[in-house]
Each structure stands twice: as structure tokens, then as C-alpha cells.
Image (cartoon, rainbow, N blue to C red; front, side):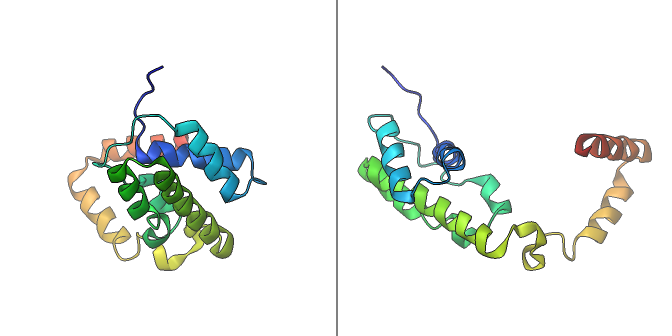
Length: 144
């Protein structure tokens, strides 16, 4: 049975979802489960190793910790190595969140510091007022 090729981000999301569904599962058992699931599947492409949504959860040095292992696993066509890297990144991200809470309260990683006011100024110069009101309405409506 042919299986669709997954990206590194897809596999990470699968590991994350599986761990959320089974929080009592050890990382070792999670690795075994993922290895069983992906063994024999096409290897992920090397052109996009990033996991974009993780940048909002933890510092880059945490969520990227396992990516060298993933890359080596892809190059060697070794699912065990890929899964080890994915689970390492997941573990680092989850540990960061448990130890430091979420990044949204971490002012050190606040990416709007120093650019929020200039951004508002710049947008107000080129964005028509009616479009600005529409965007604000959509944003307020989308959050509620």
C-alpha cells in the first residue's frame, strides 16, 4: 500500500498530537509508536525541515534541537534517527513550556518590542482608513 510522503512538520505534528492524546506515554514509548507507524513510509523531503508554528511556543534553540538528527536520518534513510530527532524537539519544546510557561508571557521573546509603534505608523500611512476599519472589525470578530 503506497503511503503519502510526509514533511518533517507533519511528523512533528503527529508526534505532538499523539503525545497530547496520551500524556502518560513516555518519550521512549512515543518513539516506538511513531517508528511503528512510519516504518516503510517514504522519507520526508530535506527541503523544509522547519516546524514554523513552534517558533511561537519555544525559543529556536529548543524546538530545533532534534533537526540535525532528522536531517541525518533522512540522508541515511533511517526512520529511527528521524523519529529520535522529532521526539527530541518535542521534548525540548514541552520542557520549555513546563519550566517557563508559555512564551506569550515571556517579555524577553516578545517580537513586537520596539516595532509595534513604527508598524502602526507605517501601516496608517499607506493603508486607507476604510480598509483599516475593515481589518480591525475582522480581527475583533475573529478573536471573539
